[in-house]
Image (cartoon, rainbow, N blue to C red):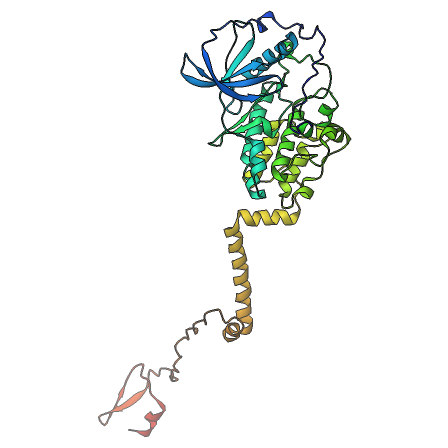
Length: 406
């Protein structure tokens, strides 16, 4: 039975004239090299087109990965050379770099890459036991989108993105490998010349690619969405379909909705997957850069473009982002209500209804106002008795008892 993650390679029954296009002769003019320069250690990986051998570069004393061609004919050789030239043109931390290329004295081509050690994203997803552990792989998906976005800017489309083609290193580095099916829109002489058919891995390819049609950067967007689908759900899209019928299922309709496969997936991430994997290419993100931006917005708690938020969801997000400010506003509102209640019912009643509150201090009373005795108007001509004599005192005042002659 065919592996579900196996790549559908171009037909081996290519016409004899295939590979004799208008490409420049220097495409094949790689120099012969000393066969003793690279001392093989052992096979590192193997694909449909070639195998990768771990080797020691005897000139520079470093461990490298040497890729060698498995099928020796002109058509496969042209594909091999094209893969090396496309990969070598991409200079990004998330893409395996090509260090050198040449031919053995036998005439067989090879090229040398940086040795990327780690585990595939496929292995990490398979071994994750909980949704939380798989959700922790989201930064790796963002790194894939960043690397592919760079490639799109260079006119290169991968066409076979899947978790098995992503290496995650021991220090978190994420590297996209196996560009054997890539097309370079900026170099027409490097376009593939295989017969039109579905190439790639069925579970991750968009419907137009499954039909054997020409594709653009939005095919890679779909594939990244399918990778994210697997990271979140724990299984690839169409995992319930028989392996030999996945291509037909891709053409027939979309996979099972993500949130039906895995409860608890955030609505925003489900929306991002749905937009990336839209059946109509025009409804997807325009390129991997836009997809990476939406994933990063989710990661940093911002609104994502792929999800329509309800008023309640927006309110919850504001509360989560500004808890102190909103809590203060609620507290002030509560104080305003308590203030009105205090004045309406009195302090004692407030304490009776709210025993948790401290009893308010008694209000400070103003000092009592002392009565001032009435004062008669000034009589400037008043005579008063003084030592048996009457004298006139200007401005004198008297009380009512002055009339008794005492």
